[in-house]
Length: 312
Image (cartoon, rainbow, N blue to C red; front, side, top):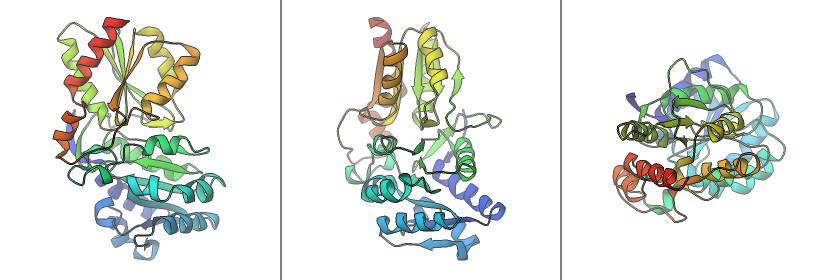
């Protein structure tokens, strides 16, 4: 792992690049462009940037209208507002007609930090993956964020991309060919498999190193796309290792762990242990403190892996 960058920073950079390459791209923001980093695009292309104010539902409806006339709207706000406050408009105006709208939600998960549980979205992945026609992506780092945003711009249809607030280490190789719906095996292993998304992938890579020192071979599979799910890489892991441990900065209800168990239960039942926020709201604290509080550190993944193997 090398380098540290917040995925929202990578988003701002690549969005500005895309603005030069494709004049159909327009950007909408709900008065948070300094935090979501869409302000980088806004300064470069003020004629294609729209601050919609604190009116998320109206922003989604406007984006759907712009898509209807051929534009490629990227709209951004915090995940708690994109997935929560504007949910009906996302369902009715974007997903139902398959509008070509890209929802890039920053400040997902508990690492929003001191803003507290009211601003820590731990349900957004579950909410978005339940909506038909919606593609859901959660990049691991800045490298994958750049690739995911470019893939979203080329893909025709609704997309939800969840990004974080804080800097995270780079774990995805720069030459990795990103594709929507395809995961990547970052660490080879034969005893069990970590299936991860978002910042938890870096935590799993560290956990795999710790386990190797204990004589346990752990595979790390990162899913940058949660919907559609990479069924091939999951089925291979289920057949080749003794247990699956999912890890996400999200509720264990309905997110990555839910998606993995729903699929494997029907084709290759294996023990699946879910690491995540255990069906509760977030709380206030520094990001590192909250990762420890909610059991999302590498040591927690090691404990989960050892427990899974003991029962397999």
